[in-house]
Length: 103
Image (cartoon, rainbow, N blue to C red; front, side):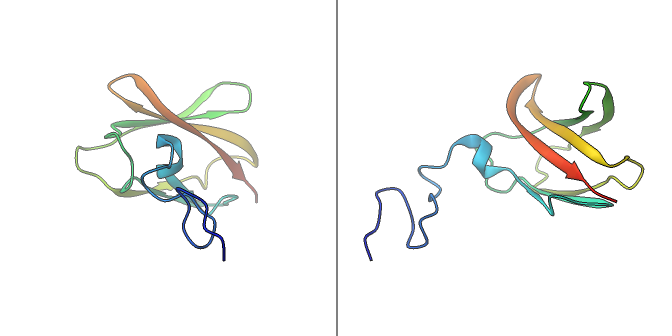
């Protein structure tokens, strides 16, 4: 098997070559009632998540305590559609993720 530089044996990027946005993991996606957020590999501490709907309206704002590495977000009250999670550190954009909600 040929191994690409910066990739593991499955062809996935290893931690040294992953961009910061690839280190924040949301699952399951699509989801219907709960999304798990894994910040354990984030290069930067995340202290807030804003969730916007597809027309740009803020649906939820979550402050994240320092040292948090995982959290669950209840999305059961959201209607089906595409949403965007905006991850920030002190008002600096660190990442954004698409969130698909299906009912």
